[in-house]
Image (tube, rainbow, N blue to C red):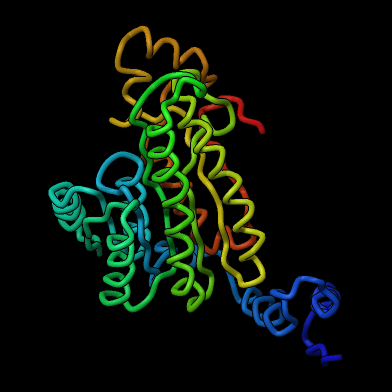
Length: 301
């Protein structure tokens, strides 16, 4: 037996005692005690410091436009140092220029998330520049074809899952050694309302987004004992270039709005605010959750 520190509450003592008999080899009593004690020092940032992400370093993939750009901007506004990335160097440079004009602390790197060398460089340059990594937001996604799920060509299916699911898994796995070196680290996967209720013309894409919800739950359970939180954002129909097929024509727009109780499309900035909350200490007791931000569209697995 180990000694319970006298200043811990009875609930804390019970929790630590249970850790000693856990059948999970990854949950050690020392780890449980360390994380429990460190979490007792976490206080919400609001009211104490408006920049609740001050001192944190974040990597956001596919972050030169749309939801990804809005997330990178918001995290930087909230005090984080942010590494943005995209497949095209020109887009990266343009996004960096826009954010630096706002006096935000950002750097940018070309990164195709499906390429090992690009992912490796993304993390190596982050550590070289900032010395640490606290936050990973995996936002990259693709949808090269439309149609029902069982009409999808095998090559298209493979591409969708390579980028939307496999690269998210690999980014999290490759970021983990750096996230483990910091306290209060977190990962956010960007899924979709389509992961809960498949869009008829986005069949394979919808299934890939369902997979991210499952990845969130599995990774959160594995990493919770280490104090690393894993959550998921599931946006509804957001007004971005990526989703323009869902609203650009009058008929498509009316069809989309008919499914949204709030009778409007969402904005990238609204999604960014949710991510900023999830990676902050304000959400320090939230892990394994998927937040649906869809204007009231139903979502349930």
